[in-house]
Length: 399
Ligand SMILES: Cc1ncc(COP(=O)(O)O)c(C=O)c1O
View (cartoon, helix red, strand yellow):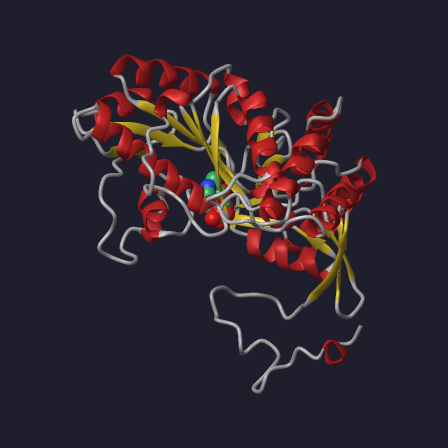
């Protein structure tokens, strides 16, 4: 479809009415199905970004479109001051698989993170003499609201939007001694991602997570896991923490939970749930439309064999990436399940991603020397083969 036929052109140019927040290619996507996207000119793209690990079931999966249609004709929203049926059902589904007891639904990951910070501060007020600090990890990423940015450890955010929300001392990932040293009477919690996704796919080791669980219990502080990228099956388990055999006190979800519909969750152990009326809320929170989609996602991921398939696909993709690495003299593969990165050894990531897009493959370079792969969890072997074939050509051309 030519872009003119879309009637999207603004007064100055097609994109000028949008606020400039990032550099985007001059392409308008109009249709998606499974692992494939189509632009307004009819070109097809194999999508290994999937909205940054959001569309866990691929584009427009039947289970989601049916849930949307059914819920849209029943009830969209009845105000967060009332219960609705999908909200209750989704909270029950999350409780069943997580071992945590209560959910508060949000519209984004950052909003869930803000909720976790508030809950930990409230808990510190009530149980630890006003403790409010949350120890977080260098290079961690927790979203783009002010407190979530302060909690993040992105080096180039250090001087942005001053003054910062205080109370987030940083330590290196996988350094248990550094965490212990950073704990003071002001500490309410430790927060981290089981795998640092935006930083370039760096895994918190199982030993570190187990050590953190023991350390936080010993000091009587909370463990918060940001499962926004790793949760909902992405690593081959429902939640990333399952690999380490631990359960946090609080976790936050988003991305895959809505599989393309804005939905997040703040999930906590019942002993930690200390919000009083008025402390937390929001107009759209827990609306029937979004939570009905969340239920459909949870049911798909929970189907017999689904998570095993994610693990198998991750192994298959890893083997392809390792073969490409050997052939082109690149570095190692990092990650778990279908959240993987390939170390390129040189700063060719943006050039590789741009060339891949020209050839109809969408991949992400979260840092100049790495590529990140976060396909749909139901990606097929044929699609993985196809991706590896295109990437092989691209690496030969760029490398
Ligand atoms: C680990 C993690 N936390 C938080 C967020 C923020 O989520 P959202 O963009 O939905 O606000 C992201 C988004 O990439 C993330 O990867």
